[in-house]
Image (tube, rainbow, N blue to C red):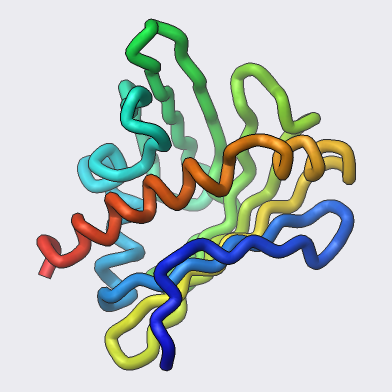
Amino acid sequence: MTSRRSLQVTTPSDREIVVVRDFEAPRRHVFDAFTKPDLVKRWLYGPEDWQMAVCEIDFQVGGAFRYVWRHTGGSEMGLSGVYREIVPPERIVHAELFDEDWTGGETVVTTIFAEQDGRTTVTITVFYSSREARDGALATPMAEGMEMSYARLDKLLPTLG
C-alpha cells in the first residue's frame, strides 16, 4: 500500500465533500485522537495563529460537542454538534453547525476509520444543506487548515503507542 500523507478532496455529489487522509498508526489510536478531548486539543486547529480554546465532548449517541478556536488577534470561531451514530473504532456520524453559519445550515459529517497493515485511512464525508453551501466551503482554505491539523496529528500519534 502506498502511503498517502496528504489530503485528498473530492466532490462525489453536488452537496458533498469527501476528504481522505492516511495515518501511520493503528485505527484505535486515530479513533481516540478524534474523540478524546485531551487529544483533540493537541491537534485540531488550522494555522498556528489559531488555537483551540474550548474542547468539550460528550461522546455518546445524542451527546453534544463544542469547539471554539481563538485567533491570536482575539477573534473566535465556534462549532457545536451532536453525535448521531458511534461505532467504535470504525465510524462516527455527527451533525454540526458553526456559530457564524457560513455553511448555509447544519452539515452532517460521517467519519470512517479503516485499518490495513497498521495504517489507518480516515474518510470524512461532509453533506451540506445545498450546492451553494458546499461550494462556499470549497472556496475557503478548509483543506489547507485540515492538512495543517493532520500534520500535527501525524506527530501526536506515535506518542499514543
